[in-house]
Structures are given as structure tokens and as C-alpha cells.
Length: 283
Image (cartoon, rainbow, N blue to C red; front, side, top):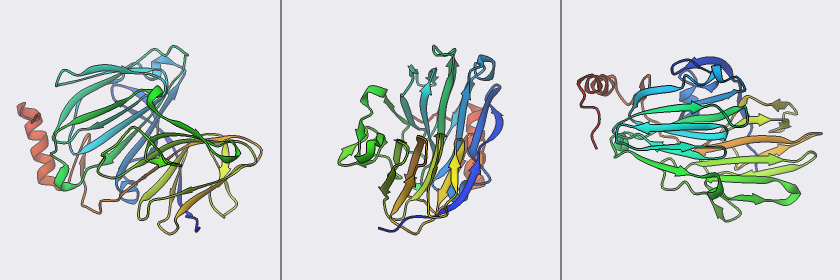
């Protein structure tokens, strides 16, 4: 087994989005070509309601998938097709915007006092950008958790571990999304799909993630190189928890304007014209 080396380490940086939500961005527009097919990772984590209650009022998406993984708190959502709902701690919403969705995501005051969630954006290939929108809403109770040798626990959102499959299926980029916790003094190896882009985002603790001997800690994104068929993680005196994400790169041109990502400026301009004219929604 050969191990992937860390290609790039990024510390998440404070930013503001929506109507005034304070969050930390792991990577975004400037780094997206290196993370293909992934476009963005945001971490919203606060115990002050003033940081998040303004939320993300009505806005459009086209050409992408948005993935929300809520670790603590509650978020209400609704869209232009009349869908409404609430996701809570441990829940996932995997939204394929496709040809177009107008929606809102409004965090509620957290029952635990802390709001904590991750949102990922993933690109869609050119021939599927105008596919019908769809949701995969997954409750925490439906996300399987496996315990491996050494007490390693893995929550499987997408992909499979030891023959156990996650509930999110039929996604074009063939993703893995795993929430992994490793006890102190433990070596863990995770095999990877050949050719996939792979990164981790550290939620808590620290660990070694390649042979460099450098320990990385929470709120850090680690992008791995393409050589190797596994990721190796080794913990020292403490527990580490991180999300591991992989997906099949698209290798296509990206035209990105706010919440819409297409393949050309012309497609992007058309999308915004349709939004202004009220003809954005196709389904």
C-alpha cells in the first residue's frame, strides 16, 4: 500500500456570507481548481446567535451541488418549489441544484447553545448542469457508524467502509464523505478510489497525515497529492476527528459567479438574466 502525501495545507480564514453569517472558509474560489470537483468548504461554528441567526435568505443556485452537514444546532430551509424542512445535529442535506433552485437556509437558535455545521459545494459536469434539481435529506439516525480495529469510528455519509455503504447515493462525482474519529496512539489507513481528489478537514485534535512528521490541527484543510492508494493517519497523545472527502475530478472549465457555476461566461450571463426575468426555474 502506498500513501498519499499532503500537497497543500490551508488554515480556514474568517469571512462573512449570507445576510451576515460569520464563518470560516476552508477553501473557495481561488483554490477551487486544485480541489476539482469541489468548489468550496465553509465551517460555521459559534456559540453567539448574533453570528449566525441572520442566515442565508432567498438566493439561487445552478450548476452545482450544495452539501450541508450539521454537527450541532438547527437549520430551517425552504425553496421555490415549496419544499420546507429542518435539519438538526448529525443530519445531512445533499442538494443537487442542477438547472436551478431558489432557496433559503435559516439557522435557528441552537438548543445546545452552539451552532456548528459544514457546507461543501461540488461542481456538476457540463452535460449534467441542467439536470432536474433534487434533494437527498438524511437524518443522523440513518447514517451508519462502524467501529474498526483500534477503536476508530467512521460515520459513512457517502461511500463505503468495510462493506457498509452510506445513505447518499447516485452522485455523479462518486464521492466519499466520512466523519472519522481516531483514539490517541492509533494508526489508521484508509484506501482511496483511484484518481479521486482527496482532502480532509480537521474538526478537533491533531494528527500526522503523511510521512512528513508534521502534526496538523483543527480548522485546517489538507489536500492530498494524486500519487498513492491510501491515506495514513497517526495520532499521538490525543483524539482526532476529521471529515474525509473524495470525488472524481471533472477537468472542465469553470465560470463562477456567486451562487452559480457554469462552464462559460455566456452560460453564466444567461443564468443571471433568467433569474432577473423570473424564468430561472426550469422544473
